[in-house]
Image (cartoon, rainbow, N blue to C red; front, top):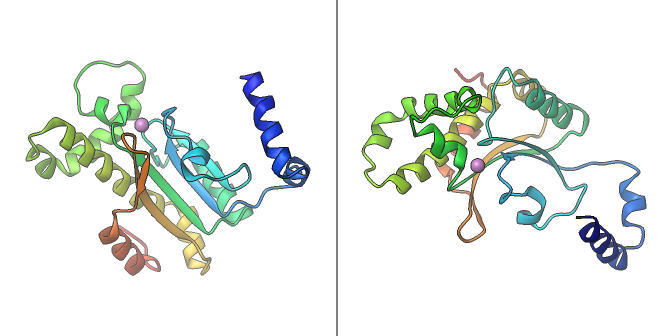
Length: 203
Ligand code: CO
């Protein structure tokens, strides 16, 4: 890892000798990324961005839990201090957390975290149970989980206050496909709903 680090530093400074000097002065990333801890979904690499360009929060299955002080602190700092213009919840197909939530196996502490995804399943049980192929059902739960996390995100006092104060702040849900490396924005329906509800308090 140290060797890799030196190689990376050399590559960057070859292109821009002042890169680190400039970056050390401060950050002004336009985007907050809430993603999964999965090692295969690193925010900067998959979006071709550099250090300084994305503010990142990651946890198992990219969850937005209203009692999670870590997530709330990151969100508050991103929205009110860094003044990001976009918040992204990024899920990914084949998410181990989401797939584990579809199972009944005992998993220890993480079960308490996955409980929130089981709630998402219960909310959409009719649609999900009708999908007989397990992989397809898992993929749909990944998508529905992103939708629910986006809704929960918009319901936080932080986003509500930003919208009430007419801040430019968009919230997006996207899904990453591990099998081909492609990021997809497929939530047109949700985006429509969101733009209608931007100025009103969601239930
Ligand atoms: Co995952």
